[in-house]
Structure formats: structure tokens, C-alpha cells
Length: 201
Image (cartoon, rainbow, N blue to C red; front, side, top):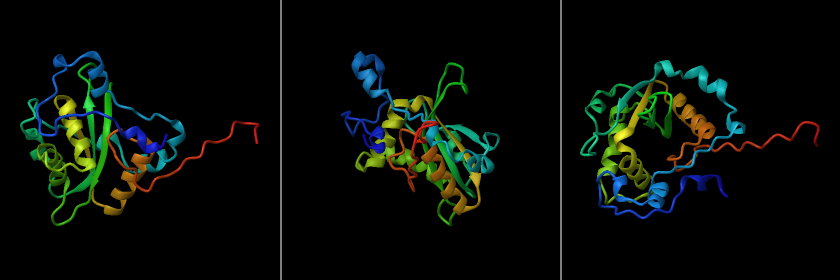
């Protein structure tokens, strides 16, 4: 299996239907297929911990709810995202049981600060992609699935950063080390060869 295969799934949905999926209308197999995700949890990939943690801290993360429960618009909190900063952002599912202790990271993204780009602009674009059924590129399809299936529980954490080169570098390191299920590609992919068992050549 190719590493990128973990990001794919074979599910047919009506691309024009923007409503929240209702599990009450699905049978058990449909629920298991639609609402399941593959998470790659492999300590052999965690090789850049020191470099990542040297620049990032959960203490510097801010959190907002991303969409309204009925998916008609992004949440009002999105309007409070900074317009004068770039940075990293993390879409995740906030579990209602023991919130904060049981969360699911779904996607890591970044935006550099330019004259027309910033955290607020970039993060609002995801809802536009969800709401625009005519844009059917691979990334947009994944965004639509993420919002439609988990919108009620979808939150966004972000870290403000000023150094655009650092933003690029950290996004690449994070995705390579974590491999979130909704990141379609792995930037500057790092291949981690498994170390041989001790005493073996």
C-alpha cells in the first residue's frame, strides 16, 4: 500500500447536498464507512519532535468553533481570526466526552502573511470550498467531506507566526510526522527507514 492510500476512501455522496449527514438515516455499515477515518500512528515517523517543539507550543494555540451546527455558515468566531498574521492551523474534531482529552486531528494547514493573505482569509476559504459544489478538485472534495460529516464538532486551532519560511518548514515537518487523514499530500515528503532490530545486521 502506498503511504498516500491512507487518505483515500471510496464513498459516493451527492456533491450538491450541503446538509449535515444524519446518522439516523443510515444503516450500520454506512455509518462505519462514512464516519470512520484512518489515522497513522507510527513512532518511527516522530523524528523531528525537538525542532517542532522548539518553535511551537500548545500554550500559544487559540481555538475557535469552525461552522454553525446547521452548516449554513462558518461560526461567528471565524470573523475574529487575525488579519495581520500568517501561521499554522489545525482542523480537529472536538469530542463531547471529556473535551480536550479526546480530540481527533484531521488536517494541518498554513498560510503566509502577504498583502492579500492571512489566517482569517485562508480559514474562511474552507467554508467557501464546502459551499461551492462546482469546485470538485481533490482538496475541495475532502474539505466538503470533513465539514459535512463532522461540522457540528469541527473546531480550529491556530498559531500566529510572522516568519514565512518558518511557517512552510513547520507545516512540512508536522504533516510528515503526524500524517493527518485529510491532508491529501505530504509536502517535502520525508522517508523514514525503519531501524534494524538490535543485534541484527
